[in-house]
Image 1 (cartoon, rainbow, N blue to C red):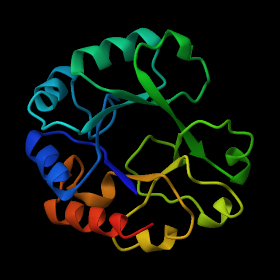
Image 2: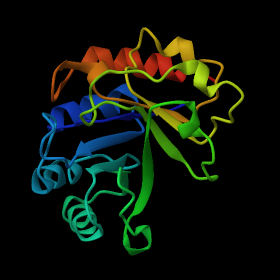
Image 3: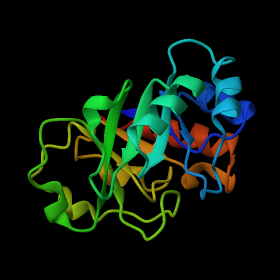
Image 4: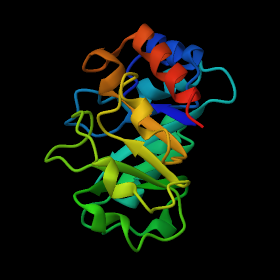
Length: 197
């Protein structure tokens, strides 16, 4: 199972996440988040990363120009996009992207096309709230292109064992405080994720 650790704000946390076995690192370009990072600071971290680690920029209700500029400036390989009002013209993006579905009910999982999606629990704010999606909503769904986020920790990952998710995305579940990761929590999280087939 693929693991993305989101809300990276400094190089040491990035390195600890990679050494724990994370496949991708997330950088939050949403100014109201306690995990916000400037494109320049993100680039400084990215330029020091070892190879074969994917960098992902998180965007909340931004326009195409902003996403393109920030991804270029910060060297993001993937844009993770919350577009609540469905105003974005994805054809104008110059970077690979994944859409975030903020799940309120099971009906939000229906009628999705055959793309990869990141699924997070709906909350009034954006990200890192630790709220979980009801797992029973995924019964009888093909979850092989779903990346699950929201309220995940090393201690509850075993609950998703039989759903076949492509990956998991964690932020608050591996933190000491908002914006500061716990090396041990990241190690424990990735170890548990790797045991899920």
